[in-house]
Length: 198
Image (cartoon, rainbow, N blue to C red; front, side, top):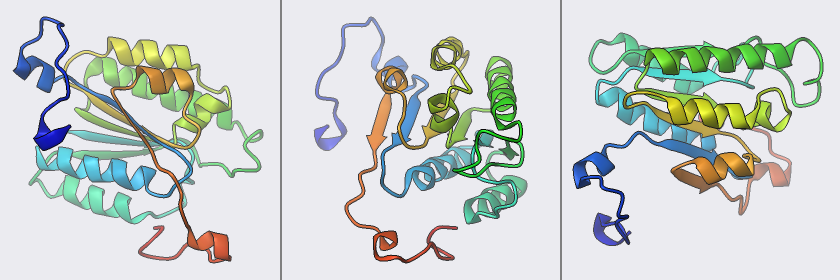
């Protein structure tokens, strides 16, 4: 994409403006750090445009207080940009104990809420944070996800984050970024820290 120009233009009958304003499905996946952070950066841009933003966290515990949540909630309440709504799907779950505690049902209901919001055009910009995992674990059907996303009305952009994105979701998405880890402090035994991980 040299100088912001597409390498090719499809013969799809769309005008340049119509093609430019197409709602996108974006996937941030891979083993590297920064998938959610990049999605929240996009949410900041959406907020700045005055768009309603809906964040749906599917894996991170509801007890965690991430910096992006505080910042986006504060911005959403400021009245300067678009409103921001933050949803935590259940109480979160650990990487190890994901088979217990009704987490599959919570994830399925979380997805059902997203689907309802898409039909109602509740938001213009959606972040489905860590949503690749409920798909990977079989809690949410990837074919249904693609069908719902494909049928969404209006100008709703959807960003999905998490490792191991399903190949069908990757094939369907308009924009896919694979965050590749080159080095990470955890490789040297260092745990996450304030201001970097949260």
